[in-house]
Image (cartoon, rainbow, N blue to C red; front, side, top):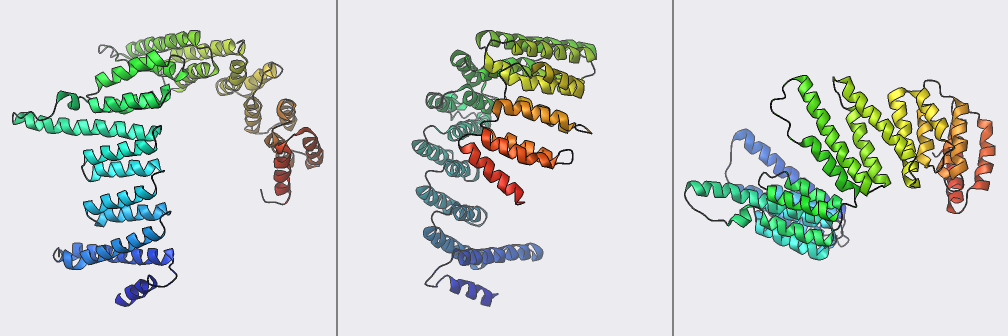
Length: 455
């Protein structure tokens, strides 16, 4: 063991240093520490740690320090040092490692978050964690993740103080102010974040974090009010407000299956009312998509009441018909694919093909509308190659000048079990004639790689 250790250590003093040699030495010493730990557990001997483990830990720490100084850009090396310090080092050592790492890599938000979490959870220092988050925000003033974790940390801090306060109350001692205990520091973080980062989705992420803690009702109400006041032009807001109606507490006396079904029906109707209001004020493709996604989710759920399922199915049909006749091109184009998928899942292949035939001349289209029908055809036990060709030809009529993937997909179908390989030459010629700009080069590269067997 001594000979092996000496040989590894000798490599660290060469004139030309290798990172692999440092890693090998560190790994060897860690393995020795693990063996000592197992032997102590086996024989029950817990003495002389300062004479046995401490010198090894000190050596490994020193080697890590040399390695991270030499190869400062290697984040994984820094993280290995952090992991070692967590398991074998002291608390002070762990803070120093993070401090050195952040001095070299202040541009990486994830490292700031990791350091702050370590201070909060491993070292039990809310003050140090807060200090790190504030420093992180100087480097990353508009980073969502940093704000989210800072917000979470302040709520965790308040929760910890509330538990301490409960114990102090038993001893008739009042140590913390009501503002801190109610999460006012988290509210300060929220208000600062709201000024820097706009958008309903970000506000909802903070609301979801606040909802984890049982003392944040006022804070949740504040976020909800701001959401409804500032982001009614965002479909995410309407989607959230509608889905909240499902979570409303039902009447406790509804114990029968029929009673619960009626309650579910009422909740779904309230959800739909919110969505309808959203459509009246925000007639956009994302708003329609949110409403239809909700209905499809409710349709997929398991229920013993067929009338509930049929009611949702009828609603989906009505919504799709309205969407397809919408004067807003983006709405009618985007929801054709949804209509196709819904028809296939509820009524099968024949219905989907019938819907496709009824829509394939009604522009505008998206590529997904055609690729969805291609996928449906290929899922059949015996795909009809004539139908596949028709779908590809119609798709290429719309997108053949810019979409090289469609041409490659068509060629692969002809090379498949149901296709005619002799058609590939003509398709290649047509693709070269039709595609423009960079798509020609991409197609040529992909086609060559396919011919040489590389893809």
